Amino acid sequence: MRKFLMAALAGVLGGALVSTQLAAPLIAQESDRNRSVYEQLDLFGDVFERIRAQYVTEVETGDLIRAAINGMLSSLDPHSSFLAPDDFEDLRVQTRGAFGGLGIEISQQDGVVRVIAPIDDTPAYEAGVQAGDLITHADGESLMGMTLPDVLDMLRGPIGSEIVITVVRDGVSEPFDLSIIRDTIRIQAVRTRIEGDIVVLRLTTFNEQTYPNLVSGLQDAIEELGGLDNLRGVVLDMRNNPGGLLNQAIRVTDAFLDQGEIVSTRGRAEGEGERYNATPGDLIEGRPLVVLINGGSASASEIVAGALQDHRRAAIVGTRSFGKGSVQSLIPLRGDGAMRLTTSLYYTPSGRSIQALGVSPDIVVPQPPRAEAAPDEDAAPARPMRTEATLRGALGADTISDDERRMMEEEERTAEEAERLRRDDYQLASALDILRGISVLNGR
Image 1 (spheres, rainbow, N blue to C red):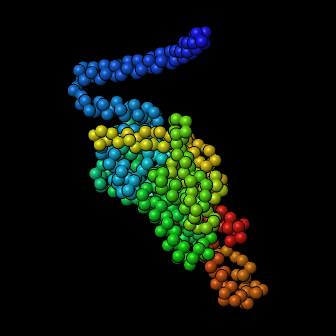
Image 2: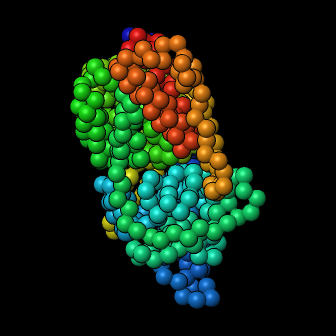
Image 3: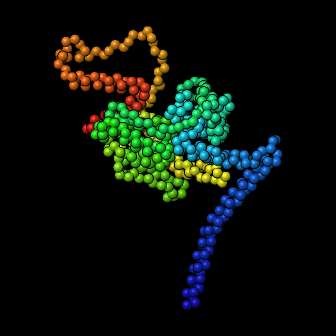
């Protein structure tokens, strides 16, 4: 019995010794890490106090703290930032669909301000701002090195006031100025139009109005066509859509899927994240769908395009999207401000990361620059196209029935309209052609 007790005691002591030996380095490592953090905080406090005491002019303590927080967040990635109370309220107003400013979505990296996309029918859009533009100055003052909140403060101003921004654009040899009059930005999230028997849904942003507007616009268009049986298909135009609310992107995608994953998010910790799935019901009951994207399509737009592409529910047409696949959590802070912090990444149903890669279209269709040539008043009018039917005395020309003649005239009008659209918007015209081809292959 005594030998048994001695053996048991030796085992316990041995186990304790092994546990202590294993735990000691971990405890020491954690202690060193904590000591390093406290030393760095002491360094920050020392610098802070020296600035307060010795800087050439007196500095507001609150401004110093906010600048330190801004610097800390902006060093992480272009989308993490500190929002002062006014900025926080502006952001909440934007998601409701109305705010003041120029009407552009911007990002900043390495001190450079880049336009993600102009918003349709806003002062920036009307002035000619394009996705991918770099803004270097505002009213002659350089924006290089400024924080994103400070840049936004400079671009904002009283309604009706003018701002002159200096733009650097790919393909243009010299920087140039654009004059913009600030206005209240009221975003119409979805615009609906009918091209023949195809419905075009133009999504400009993902705010609280997007999904309801999409459903009502689509239903009205289908009713105007005389029912779902007369609908050939839908074009979902998300070019220059900078994104917005995740839940709206999920609902828009779900509108055209019956089942399957829409998007997942993965955070820092193992198993941390969310997965979102479609629910039964397709608003157009499987009819062909084409999605238009370009370099100004970002975030929520890429979630929709990526999910529909992975499920082979839509043909993606245009050019590669922006590549913003990160998730920002809005964390309220004391004093009515907030912190926008990148906490996870988006993944499409097949497991692709959108971040920095974007969504690659199935069919690449660049948008050619629009010709700005002035019309030649002395130019002779275009001669009508000659066909067999236009020749005098052509066989069968006198025996065409009224219905056949009306059909020919309708086809000519359709061709003329298609040509006009091709001149105005080559990408959309291509999308319509592709959708018509898909519907023919599907037997519709």
